[in-house]
Amino acid sequence: MGERLKGPDAAALASLRRADPVIAALIDANPEFDPDAWLEQLPVMDAFGVLIFQVIGQQLSVAVTRTMLGRLMDRFGGRLPTPDQLLAADPEDVRAAGLSRRKVQTLRELAERFVDGRLSPAELERLPDEEVVARLTEVSGVGRWTAEGFLAIALHRDDVVLPGDLALRKAIQRAYGLDHLPSQAEVVAIAEAWRPHRSLAVSYLFASAYGA
Image (cartoon, rainbow, N blue to C red; front, side, top):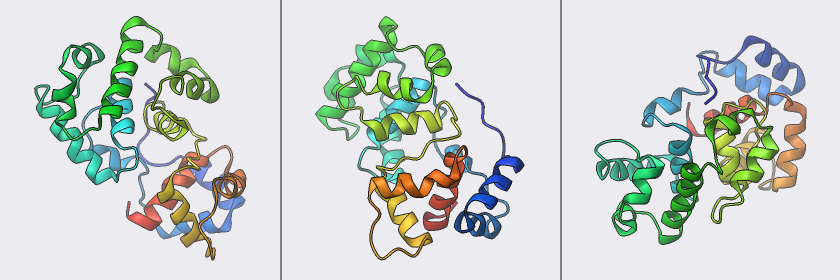
């Protein structure tokens, strides 16, 4: 998986400041912000672990997702399961962590692809963003939001927007003083100015609305 650096890159911050005064104000208001600090509240996750996190977290808050991850880990010796371990487990035991049957089935389909090589962490690391999204969304229950979260968290890609994320849309509405909740198309249009550092801009928007 891609390695993360501690704290945002100075050149990326300078680029965002020039590109968008709203994002510039958020950066200046939070000079000590580490966009990846929230990950320290989560268990250690490899590529498959990030997909577990993303699938469980569909339509849920990070806090609720974290609780469910803990319950799942309790069933696997205090760690997130490997693909082999998840496939070997009784699906009903996995579901007892609070997952829906559909989410359990999605995780099992992902696990099968990791085991048989159709999904390879090393290959995903090398692929362009859109090809990663295409590979992951072949699995029923994995939509673009889930795949883009994988890009941002597991691969630390710099230019991910998450336009389908309701929390981000609300953060943009607040930060930009909009009188309506922006559509996904509006989010993409607003985010165009942030290229090629859209992931970082998104992190500052989340922090501005929900805490660092």
